[in-house]
Length: 168
Image (cartoon, rainbow, N blue to C red; front, side, top):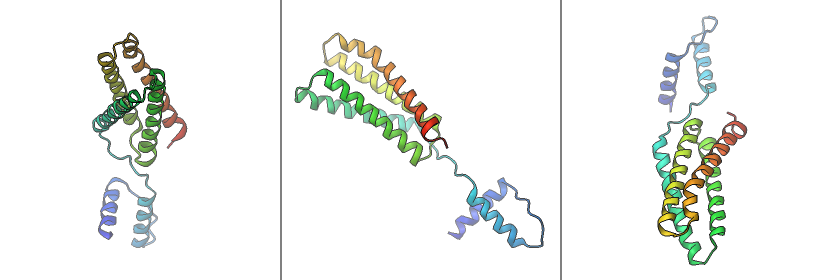
């Protein structure tokens, strides 16, 4: 542990200078440097937005396909499936934004872009899936409308989370 503190101290000493009145006490300067290291804000963690986008894309696709299979086997109406799917997406967005902004301190712009890309591509893929396996005219409308709704939802929740809830 002492080695870690010395490493942090040396890294910080190289990047910042602390000007202390010279009272002939080298220990006082060392103590002040240690306190400054404790007060220095923590940097955001590294973020692989491509990895996060692929994981989110996979989760969205798998859960929605499984949900659709379950709902159709229980004879749910298409309107019920539609609203339940959108509630699921909304809840997933809230959980995702809360996790990455509050717990992991990721870069907010990268998170919103990765979320926007993964959710929009997932919605387009699911709309294509519906076109292929559901022979109905409304499925073509999904290909046009659902990506726009998803972009609006992600942009709105991204704004709310980055500007209003987690102002850090």
